[in-house]
Image (cartoon, rainbow, N blue to C red; front, top):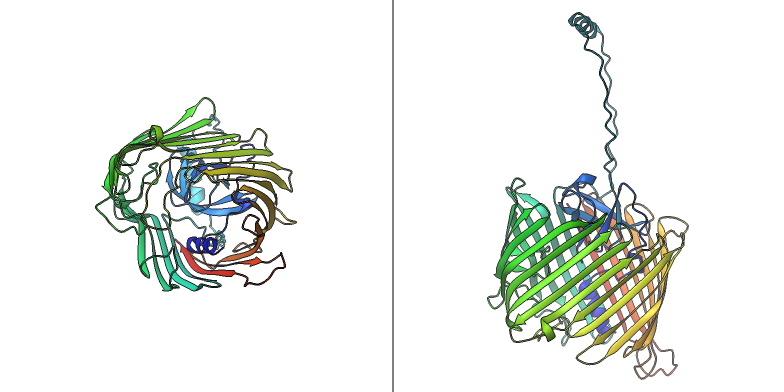
Length: 544
């Protein structure tokens, strides 16, 4: 239980919610844009400049009839756009503001008046009295944190504390800063970093940094991308999010775009994965590409890839290639595939295939949504630090199906995983039910049950509520029960998570969260203490 608590506390993130799964998409209607693909921090939209999207615009993504996440537009083409925001899922939608241009009609104008007639009209206009009218226009109401911005900046000041019986208290203060697309003369700046100080570290604790104070920098780059030229250059600590498989590096990227095709070069030294400290023992150099297009009527296709020489102490010198592609057809089909290959070095995968992932979402009718994914990982990477940063040899698959009854959405999900090195296997399945509008659009409820088989035999159930009593306040509550039956005796555990956020001004907000977990003895045997853990987070965040 303690390891789970510490992992949750270190991540300081909201637990996964069934409300955050993609809802069954509706038939495409004018004025709506949809997320067709999403990563941990970015979303890809099927709308662009032609639909009124602009760089710096902050979008409110909607899921299940309620606002799910704010996303700032980073780049825009004529029919596609990307935006930065944590928690976006495929199927999220956003209301567009641009109205389609009215149909142009050819009108035959009457002949011009004579010079004498024009002179008479001018004389009458000049002699007419004009009354003074006082302007009383009302300002346009904007919700806090949603006004358009040239760039996007997020700054979070957090105070995190957690306590576990038997080990004592942990405490850290954090400052997270993210700045994207900020104008700086002829350049734009992108920064993503964290500074933290651990004021309490119990002796013998694991999965904690070696130093009490540290700064982790994932991105700190300047980009030169003039609108009049197809070239773009980024330098510094570059995080090329549009290059599959690319990591942070101290170097530069140069890209060239012509129409829907992009190609470029990258090179630099790769920082230490666990601390982001500069190092000369890791590096990469190579090229990348990307392409957007259409197949037939309404099928949007995106393909991207990377080919590079990579050096690391764990794998040696090797050539890596990663290529992926996605296809999106209206509101009924989404496909994504990605494969990673590696050749040379000291560690080899069978056939050179290090890993692959396949995702599919299918909506044969408006109310039915079916999705699934399969992960294949074959590269076994030796590591000398904790926690583990790379997965070992494993297989993972999951599937989800849901039906929208209108007031209620019901579904079932399941999956399985196998660790190849140890031979351990695990499977799970269970139903989920959600009510996106519980008597009011401002409250949503969801509940689920999951049966687990394999080396983690047991079961779990949860109940969650999300409420927005007013526009600037969002509340979340989640009660969970978990039982593991293969630990010598049945072990039951309850957890309670509550979170609230308040938008104070256009730029400032407050977030509070509390997580507590405790085991209970249902066997009646007694004879020991009941372990308990508490995690608290207080954050002040600002958006610019």
